[in-house]
Image 1 (cartoon, rainbow, N blue to C red):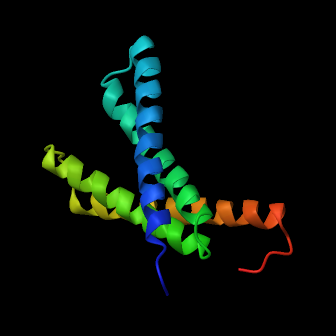
Image 2: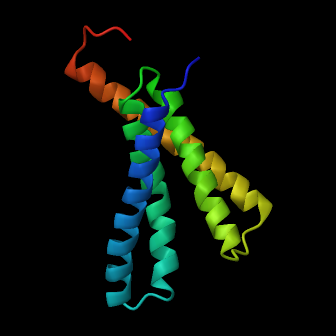
Length: 127
């Protein structure tokens, strides 16, 4: 099975962009309503959105959409985990493994949504 690396890179870039946009917007809204530690809460909301959107874009550009979406999801979750650990996150190992599994699942769901969208647009297409 060959990996479509360009699609994976596009998916990762989109995942980080999606996370950044949701995190910044959520941070603003949560700060306005006086939530404790709005940046962390917004990042916790933005990370799953990033994995889903990145999986969608990664799956949209490849033939095996779900596989490529899952690859994007696990790479995105791994990068976020590494960045958070280097920043001093107190997360335990089971939490990090759960986040990686959630990245795989959400990326795969994003890839599946891309496949569903593609099949609805052209039902006679054979991948």
